[in-house]
Length: 311
Image 1 (tube, one colour):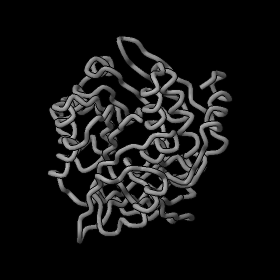
Image 2 (cartoon, one colour):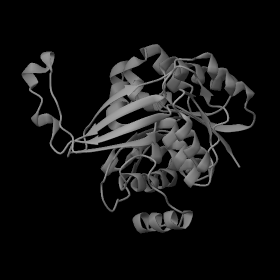
Image 3 (tube, one colour):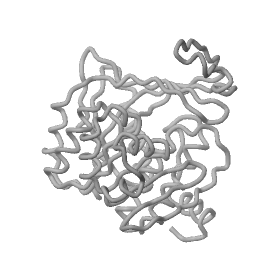
């Protein structure tokens, strides 16, 4: 089985639904003295974090990813869940007198989100663990404590391990130089259209220039599908259609897992992205990020329904 390294956050998600629209409660002329309360009507705690979500979906796809992360002393119930789902957490480090990362995610009726995130322990030396792992074929650097993200990118370049760079919520914390170096060393850069625009603003460049820095650039657009830029070409990938839109949280992580599976299976970029889109609809249909399940047979059927092509 291919060894996939998945770094990022392991977090407890507190997911909340706001029945209205954020925009109706924020006064544009008063943003400098913002003081607003959103009364939610649904709250659920679930297992999440970028590394946890990606690894969970990879496990559903038949892989056994190696998770890299630092957690607190409140991790045991999450640890039990990951082990039950055949996810390798043998390299995860537990820190005493510290809490595991936590995300407080509020979603309005237009699927806009406001998130408060506590990142947990700030150990950077931990990253050296990647030197002890033999046979890694691919890694993904997803949002985490910023110095750890930078260290992973540096180590993967040194060890010649191809990696997917997924800076996500941490984009604004990077310096322009660190961001450019991390992207240039990656095999794939992935982000949604908002995140990619933040990168363009940070680097003060246009999309065609960004596409030349990295081998493969993926821009996800939610219900509008994806765009892939590689070798001077642009691919437009239509979305897969969910049966409902219960909760969009975690859809991006599910897409990444599907795309990784497709890459490792030797699929074309377009087919790998279509697989990613198909995996993503399962989490959109369930409230929470690791609350969905599917068999490979169910996935194949769903893929065919959406793309009229056998998986």
